[in-house]
Image (cartoon, rainbow, N blue to C red):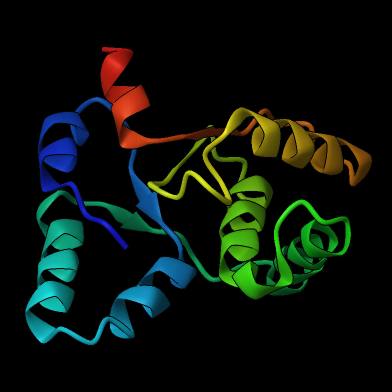
Length: 136
Protein backbone atom coordinates (compact mmCIF):
# COMPACT_ATOMS: atom_id res chain seq x y z
CA UNK A 1 0.00 0.00 0.00
CA UNK A 2 1.41 3.37 -0.93
CA UNK A 3 0.54 6.53 0.96
CA UNK A 4 0.79 10.01 -0.49
CA UNK A 5 0.25 12.24 2.53
CA UNK A 6 0.62 15.35 0.37
CA UNK A 7 -2.49 14.34 -1.57
CA UNK A 8 -4.54 14.14 1.61
CA UNK A 9 -3.16 17.41 2.95
CA UNK A 10 -4.01 19.28 -0.24
CA UNK A 11 -7.34 17.66 -1.15
CA UNK A 12 -8.97 16.78 2.17
CA UNK A 13 -10.72 20.16 2.10
CA UNK A 14 -11.89 19.70 -1.55
CA UNK A 15 -13.24 16.16 -1.38
CA UNK A 16 -15.07 13.94 1.05
CA UNK A 17 -12.49 11.22 1.71
CA UNK A 18 -13.38 7.74 2.90
CA UNK A 19 -11.67 4.46 3.64
CA UNK A 20 -13.35 1.12 3.99
CA UNK A 21 -12.98 -1.54 6.64
CA UNK A 22 -10.87 -3.43 4.10
CA UNK A 23 -8.31 -0.60 4.05
CA UNK A 24 -8.15 -0.71 7.85
CA UNK A 25 -7.51 -4.45 7.75
CA UNK A 26 -4.68 -3.90 5.25
CA UNK A 27 -3.18 -1.21 7.44
CA UNK A 28 -3.35 -3.46 10.48
CA UNK A 29 -1.42 -6.15 8.57
CA UNK A 30 1.38 -3.72 7.65
CA UNK A 31 4.47 -5.36 9.19
CA UNK A 32 6.42 -2.14 9.77
CA UNK A 33 4.96 -0.52 12.92
CA UNK A 34 6.30 2.93 12.00
CA UNK A 35 4.66 2.83 8.57
CA UNK A 36 1.47 1.32 10.03
CA UNK A 37 1.23 4.20 12.52
CA UNK A 38 1.94 6.74 9.78
CA UNK A 39 -0.98 5.37 7.73
CA UNK A 40 -3.28 5.52 10.75
CA UNK A 41 -2.12 9.07 11.45
CA UNK A 42 -2.95 10.17 7.89
CA UNK A 43 -6.52 8.92 8.37
CA UNK A 44 -6.87 10.71 11.70
CA UNK A 45 -5.07 13.94 10.75
CA UNK A 46 -7.14 14.50 7.62
CA UNK A 47 -10.50 13.49 9.05
CA UNK A 48 -10.89 10.67 6.57
CA UNK A 49 -14.18 8.97 7.33
CA UNK A 50 -14.24 5.24 7.86
CA UNK A 51 -17.20 3.77 6.03
CA UNK A 52 -19.47 1.64 8.18
CA UNK A 53 -19.24 -2.11 7.89
CA UNK A 54 -22.49 -2.51 5.96
CA UNK A 55 -23.98 -4.89 3.42
CA UNK A 56 -21.17 -7.43 3.85
CA UNK A 57 -23.13 -10.09 1.96
CA UNK A 58 -23.81 -7.80 -1.03
CA UNK A 59 -20.17 -6.66 -1.09
CA UNK A 60 -18.83 -10.22 -0.95
CA UNK A 61 -21.29 -11.39 -3.63
CA UNK A 62 -20.29 -8.58 -6.00
CA UNK A 63 -16.57 -9.18 -5.36
CA UNK A 64 -17.09 -12.87 -6.14
CA UNK A 65 -18.76 -11.93 -9.44
CA UNK A 66 -15.77 -9.75 -10.43
CA UNK A 67 -13.51 -12.73 -9.80
CA UNK A 68 -15.81 -15.29 -11.46
CA UNK A 69 -16.05 -13.16 -14.60
CA UNK A 70 -12.26 -12.69 -14.71
CA UNK A 71 -12.37 -8.94 -14.15
CA UNK A 72 -10.13 -9.25 -11.10
CA UNK A 73 -7.88 -12.28 -10.44
CA UNK A 74 -8.90 -14.67 -7.67
CA UNK A 75 -5.55 -14.00 -6.00
CA UNK A 76 -6.57 -10.33 -5.65
CA UNK A 77 -9.80 -10.77 -3.70
CA UNK A 78 -9.08 -7.69 -1.57
CA UNK A 79 -8.98 -5.60 -4.75
CA UNK A 80 -12.35 -7.04 -5.73
CA UNK A 81 -13.66 -6.22 -2.25
CA UNK A 82 -12.39 -2.62 -2.54
CA UNK A 83 -14.29 -2.18 -5.80
CA UNK A 84 -17.42 -3.89 -4.50
CA UNK A 85 -17.39 -1.77 -1.33
CA UNK A 86 -17.05 1.43 -3.38
CA UNK A 87 -19.83 0.27 -5.70
CA UNK A 88 -22.31 -0.69 -2.99
CA UNK A 89 -21.59 2.56 -1.10
CA UNK A 90 -22.08 4.59 -4.32
CA UNK A 91 -18.66 6.21 -4.21
CA UNK A 92 -17.78 8.46 -7.14
CA UNK A 93 -14.08 7.55 -7.25
CA UNK A 94 -11.99 4.64 -6.03
CA UNK A 95 -8.50 6.02 -5.59
CA UNK A 96 -5.63 3.57 -5.92
CA UNK A 97 -2.01 3.21 -6.92
CA UNK A 98 -2.79 -0.30 -8.24
CA UNK A 99 -2.44 0.19 -11.98
CA UNK A 100 -2.41 -3.51 -12.85
CA UNK A 101 -5.63 -4.69 -11.21
CA UNK A 102 -7.65 -1.52 -10.66
CA UNK A 103 -6.65 1.79 -12.17
CA UNK A 104 -6.79 1.31 -15.92
CA UNK A 105 -9.38 2.00 -18.58
CA UNK A 106 -9.97 -1.67 -19.40
CA UNK A 107 -10.67 -2.63 -15.78
CA UNK A 108 -12.94 0.35 -15.25
CA UNK A 109 -15.03 -0.52 -18.31
CA UNK A 110 -15.31 -4.18 -17.31
CA UNK A 111 -16.21 -3.31 -13.73
CA UNK A 112 -18.88 -0.86 -14.88
CA UNK A 113 -20.32 -3.54 -17.18
CA UNK A 114 -20.55 -6.04 -14.33
CA UNK A 115 -22.02 -3.39 -12.06
CA UNK A 116 -24.71 -2.56 -14.62
CA UNK A 117 -25.55 -6.27 -15.04
CA UNK A 118 -25.93 -6.51 -11.26
CA UNK A 119 -28.13 -3.40 -11.00
CA UNK A 120 -25.51 -0.91 -9.82
CA UNK A 121 -25.72 2.12 -12.09
CA UNK A 122 -23.85 4.78 -10.13
CA UNK A 123 -20.75 5.58 -12.22
CA UNK A 124 -17.62 4.57 -10.33
CA UNK A 125 -14.32 5.98 -11.57
CA UNK A 126 -11.06 4.14 -10.87
CA UNK A 127 -8.33 6.77 -10.64
CA UNK A 128 -4.86 7.28 -9.27
CA UNK A 129 -4.10 10.22 -6.96
CA UNK A 130 -2.14 11.74 -9.85
CA UNK A 131 -5.22 11.79 -12.08
CA UNK A 132 -7.30 13.52 -9.45
CA UNK A 133 -4.47 15.95 -8.79
CA UNK A 134 -4.34 16.79 -12.51
CA UNK A 135 -8.04 17.66 -12.51
CA UNK A 136 -7.49 20.60 -10.17
